[in-house]
Length: 97
Image 1: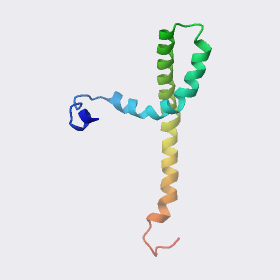
Image 2: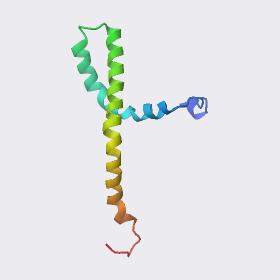
Image 3: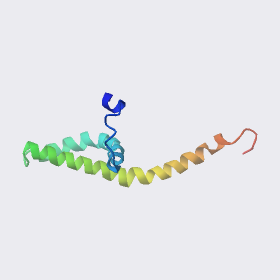
Image 4: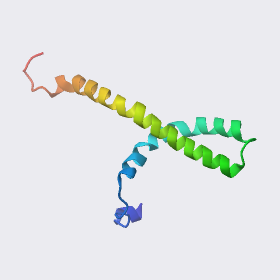
């Protein structure tokens, strides 16, 4: 955090950072339950290092899929509904309905 605050990481750029940031919440929601289930199912079939690699890539892919096909489409719907719901609060007092 100190390096970030001091600007020592300003050389890191790219669209991938936005995607990485957007997938952190789906990853947080999915990783434990699905991860442990996958580990239990595959632990006898794969070596530990391969299993860790497979689960890591799988969880990152699942998080991206949730972001891309659930969060992004729903964001527009939720934004419109929220704007419509807040519209009466934005009207100046005394303008009616």
